[in-house]
Image (cartoon, rainbow, N blue to C red; front, side, top):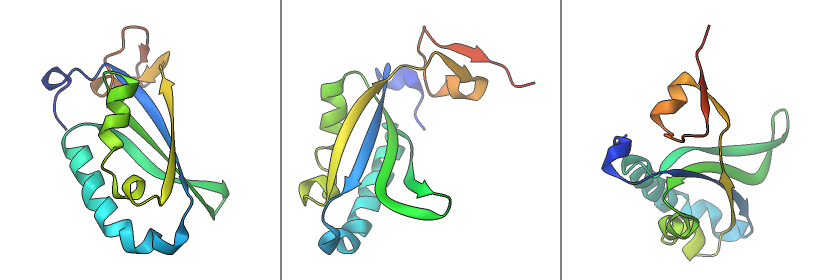
Length: 120
């Protein structure tokens, strides 16, 4: 992952994803994975994964956390995601401001208002 100084990633955004068109989903997955891999390589994405309704029961939702200097920039990052372009998923952003974080998370987020808690 690129160092924070390479980009002006100073904010985190939670991206809630909902699959709305299952008819194209499986066909688009390989293009989406290739796109997502590039976003991890350029340092935009921190983590992504599926959300479960209950233990072991998958849902049609996922969550990602990404870094960007603004909401507009975050929206721009996902503008060419094949899931968005093809209308397969609906995306909702929420600005995320950590107040406390594990020491290791400090390498991901340089927020001044978040206190690092060292692991015992």
